Image 1 (cartoon, rainbow, N blue to C red):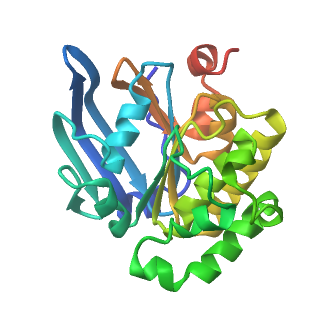
Image 2 (spheres, one colour):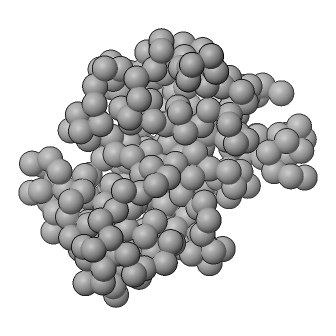
Image 3 (tube, one colour):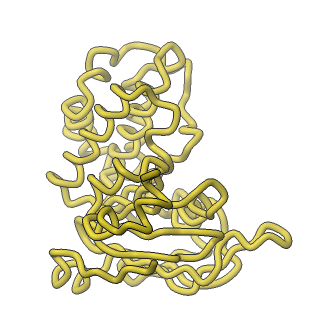
Amino acid sequence: MRSCATPKSSALIWATKMLEIDGLDHSYGRHAALRDVAIRVGDREVVAILGANGAGKTTLLNAVAGLLRPSGGSIRYRGTELIGLRAHQMVKLGIAAVTENRHLFGAMSVTDNLLLGAYTARARDAAGTSIARVFDLFPRLAERRRQAVRTMSGGEQQMVAVGRALMARPSLLLLDEPSLGLAPVIAGELFAALQRIGRESDTSIVMVEQNARRALKMADRAYLLALGRIVGEGTATSLAQDKAVAESYLGL
């Protein structure tokens, strides 16, 4: 089922590789969660990682984010090896992650949670511009800027989590199951904002998402992960039209 279709902007993407993952392995005890994983992400590219529960998607994203140390392999960001660095060092390099559990501060307001994302000196200097951009992307947050986050719906909290990551002004945004558990209307609003980020900014996006159909509509390329291995890759368009992919990942 492995597809090696070339994306439309291949010359630009492969000439400007932002993220290069090679031979990545990770195990939890005797369980091999990742096996010889290789992935490329170019500048201003949206890449989806698709797979069933237990495929290793979150482990892969956590490895890139510095939340776990892989058993082996290499993760290079603009030529810098990331393995061994911690999460706060990733932020300084230009990598921001939205994890599945969000880690928001429920008693604090939307605005205060967002400002916590302006961690680096560069981000603090641009905090005013960044928060205006977040409110433009997520009008709901502008309306609720003084509201305590714990009183908000799950979808609104997810918007806060994505907005906080954007406050770091990342070059690479990592998203772990952004639509998980969200009502369809809220998920639609969230993905519309993510599409704008991918289209209007210089930020590359790597997204783990179980809603494969929606992810492929947004992505430039995608990788298929099964039992810790990459079993397919290609342009989002080619994978969406692949019969085997449709049967296995799109429920058709």
